[in-house]
Image 1: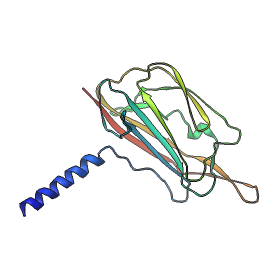
Image 2: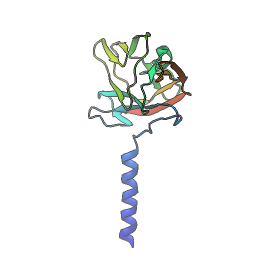
Image 3: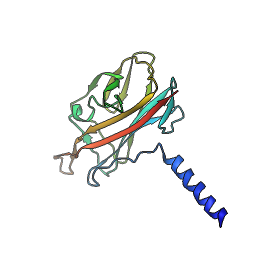
Length: 190
């Protein structure tokens, strides 16, 4: 009997530790075609909630078209907003790290979201040099930024996604999702 209880306790602890850094993908409504995921990853691509001071980590963001149709994102300034890739102090929500210096998006026809395709990006932190990265139809100029000191931080993303379909009879069918509200908390430890 005692051995069974001990096994159950060990299993529960193992479950807690393996899911501690996980975040649910956010699908705000089953009728919308997009699933978003936002997290902090270590150098091995594992989601983490604690990072040692001075260690490199990545801001991970993905968007997946879960529908069977092309869903093109338009009005990029709403979707690829200034909040994406900022790091905030958890206590007062002050921005402490802003790696994105400038974003340039092609606004002509929208970013095509192929059916059942996931677009992913990993932004390294700290960034040793200014650099430019591309994600979907946007280009991000990232400024050099320093290590974070020990403390509690978060990344967050709040936005609606304007998108459109081209119907079988070549008409444009425009939509916009409700607001996505993603937040991922993490800590820098000594």
